[in-house]
Amino acid sequence: MKRTAGKISQGLITTAMVSVCLASLVTPLSTSLLGAFSALSVCTWILGGGLVELPETFKRNPSTFVALLLFGFMIVAITYSPASNEEAFSVLKKYRELLLLPPVFCLLSGSATYRGRATGCFLTGCIGLMVLSYLFYFDLLQGDRYGYSLVFHITHSFFMAVLGYWSLHLAMQPGWSKYFWWLVCAAAVINLVYIAPGRTGMFVFCCLTLLFLYQRLSFGKWLASLLIFAAVLAGAYHSSHNLSSRVDEALQEIQRYQPGHSKTSVGQRFDWWKTSFDLFKKQPLIGHGTGSYRILHKAATAGTDITPTDNPHNEFLFLAVQYGIIGLLLFLLIIGLQIYESRKAPVINRYLFQGVVLALLSGSLMNSLLFDSQQGHFYLFMSAALLAGND
Image (cartoon, rainbow, N blue to C red; front, side, top):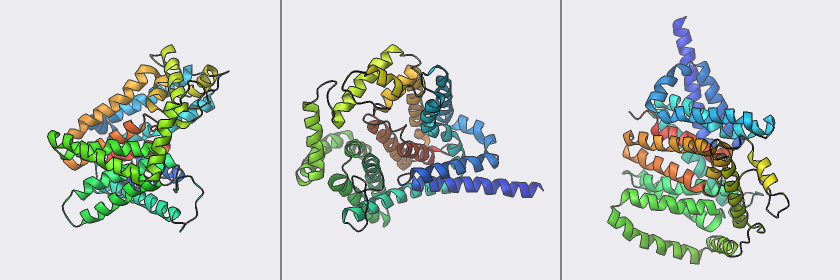
């Protein structure tokens, strides 16, 4: 009887790990499948008795406990939010990756095989997204999304930036596979520069490239490489209408910005950020509560030409308005603890994790990436795959 129960438990845990890999695979591709596989992984983990492993996970990776603290604070923040319970819970569920962080760390800490499979599945999903983009671009498939992609253009460009950075590191590894990863890197960069119109991904890739050069070169060579990188960027700008038009458009939007009257992508963000900072100053310690942003922003901008929004397209301000300094510091503490935990990881894993963090933080300057399902889950799964089990 005990042996049968043990087999069932192990089977459930294996199912949970497979589900994590499948969720990693569809992270760049489908929010609905991502939600389904994420839920399946947690349910089978609980049924398989995974809860008993939580104390050990908290000990090995304290960031997972802080993630639960932040999510718990978000639940408490519903009690003083002006939003309805329905709206508050709608925002809360967007941050479910915080709740998922401990069980996913638990699952992957016990299996180096599944950690590798999770990262491999994610890369496969990114490559699949890139291939579909090329098929749309050359009219071999029909798609109605802006930016030749299966997903929103900001999301697509973000994953192309991550794929380019990740494949750069894999191309530096010994073996014949490096030639494949050089090809993938070139294809991802071409897609990002010449096809995908997402400026967030362009910016994130620039940040990741600078990080890659710093990781792989001495400080002196890194400084010298900045000149080469600047020359490459200049060449890309002059050879790509996609890149130059998006950069020129952003510069024009900045130059023509009129506070409270701009309807451009950049101009609206400036208005949203200023309004958000004013809201934050009114309740700086604990914020205004979960789901409060849309209501507060609407009230603060009533009678103005500022476009209403449900989030400021800046994760740091979004957290600060809803959860104050406490919530923002808890989020940064998770990142800080994970960076500290990564010191035990193999060098390549540490480098890749640093890229995961930088992609999340740099992209969050212009978008609410933890709030966004696909980018938030990317951070969840890849941080777990790269850090879990590193003692």
